[in-house]
Image (tube, rainbow, N blue to C red; front, side, top):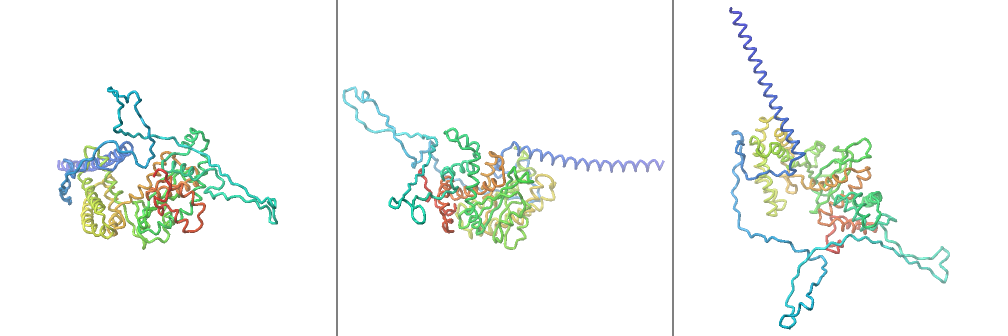
Length: 521
């Protein structure tokens, strides 16, 4: 009898252990299902969702069902702001630019209608003027270079040294013996690299205006032009290395005839010595940090990048301060918000709190821009306001990291931020650097848009030529130059340049807008 009781107790304990085991497994399965569902929603949002990283509602309030953990520090209530009165702008059609040429068309009454009923002729007492915008289709023309020959009739054009016939020298061309003028080259390259119009589409456009210009010819011109501009690119690289801050980013590019590679990379380096931004695109089949090592050489200063592991070696460089990017950290938390859907914007209170901390950091930057603070004043402002927020944010992250599954989107966001923390906080130590890498990300966007149209480069040489043209165009745009007029200006003068000073005057960040010939502006 006692043995039966003991056996029953043992069986009951075993059942309890089994039940505990099942509950534990069930909890693990539920957690894994939750993580997988979150990943599915995140992928669906990437495919079909809004691309913007703006939060759907930014009123400083947490969701009604989004109560933060009581043992974690909370942000204080948003400051009250007073909205001052303002005058509403008058809406309506904007006037047409005054610098455009005007063609006057007179609309007058016939003589019969100028006769009044009383028998007198009506006098003109005023006029009404309205303007319409007209478009003249592109005009293409042929430049005939005529060179007169001269000879001496007395000696019949021959002396001891040979013929004495004289003829004017043809100006040097950026592509020797080519039929393309600087204006045509500038138009073709601007259309592709600034307006993302592939060569095959341009070929069709030329056909419509009666000119046969194969895409292979345009491609050949682009590569020869890029080769001629390499001296300008080398000087731009030297200029970037003189900058106190260098921003770096990279993006994939497909090159069909790159041996052993299905994916290559276009790197972008940005510097702004003396406030003049310089952007340099660099093609390389590798995403290795060796590309950055080769570019930077003996550089000493600040380098700002995203969290890609290939940049990790910069942390060990004595003369380099490696600064992180807050936009990438924020993007991880935004992904959590998007995966949660519209009805629940701040899952568990944690995502909303993180975004508010980051938002407060950017508010400081916005206020500094509005006040026009210089480098030293910005540094002091960050030390006074941003550093305390960062300390509070770090305390919050350290507390929350143990409470979220590491494989969840929120867990990944928190761990990414903590892993990058030593880089993320360094922007507060120097007013010359911003909190993020947006400057170079914005510069790489035109390349990404173009890639959607032309899809790939055929050869590595073509990809390198693209990098040269993108460097010229994007640097010109960054310095408020219109790309077509800059390229035309460059292609007209580059073949005649001989000295280093003459080449320097052609750099896109050295040219003033007024120097470029533009019949409209």
